[in-house]
Length: 244
Figure 1 (cartoon, rainbow, N blue to C red):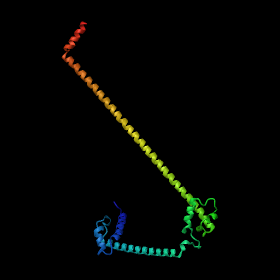
Figure 2 (tube, one colour):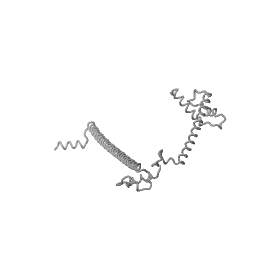
Figure 3 (cartoon, rainbow, N blue to C red):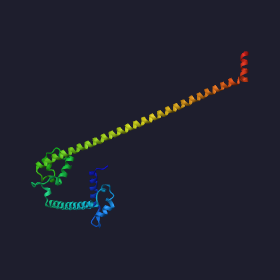
Figure 4 (tube, one colour):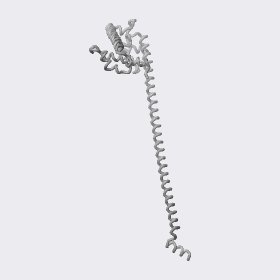
């Protein structure tokens, strides 16, 4: 069961969606939206039409104002961005120094340090190896070199950690698969042993049933002999036995 707060929030959301559904080209946007969508909605069950119409008008006005403000801010941003690029201020800081990150020197420095061209050289000697490094002060360039070294060490550390994590996950997955395979083999082995035991019990049961049937047959024959008396062959055999 929804609370009143949930019903009001849901109704507000549906009313905000109504702003997208309606437009100025419709003859009666509020009436059409109410009849087509919101009249049968559970959230608007206790909302009268006049209140829906007023709230829709307010929401449409708020949305138009927000859209117009967003559009104006976008225009101002594009204007400021164009002025910033055209004036060339983006390449210089407040002190008029060239921004290292806005020049080609940043990419060249990263490639050179990655290739190890800075080794066995002082920052000043390394700066003299490329013309792109000359516009910067030796102190600033030295700081950039040390910063790039730290960045690449951190990047290598991250790469090693990722490789270690992947290796660990691979080993865990391998161990998991091996464990699952072992469990499956043990389960199959247990099933085979169970099937063998069932077969042996069935065989033993058939053997006992056969022996029981044989004993029953012998008892029946013995009873028949007692009832019918000895046969002629048995009488002759008994006489020969007594005569001997």
